[in-house]
Length: 87
Image (cartoon, rainbow, N blue to C red; front, side):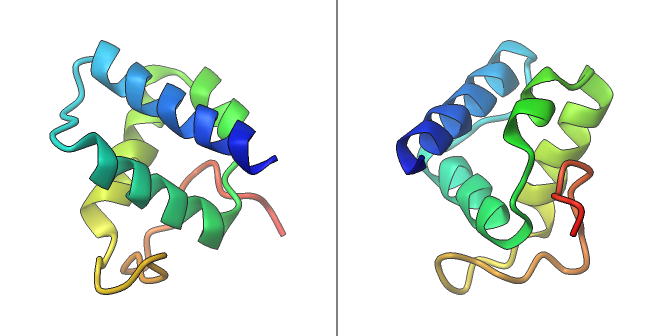
């Protein structure tokens, strides 16, 4: 299960690159996505299939709001991804 999630993280990064979104450091972005997934249990398949507006909202929202003082990060300054699991 973990391996499949990492493949989806990589697919999200690949899509972001293909869409022309800024992916400076792939490892940092992967760690940001993993942290967000651990905190919010992100619906990765839905995120990957989202329209560009909603895909970009979560991609940049995670990167822009994460506080990287630990790994996995748990502070996203109040940001909740649109594709966070509903609990």
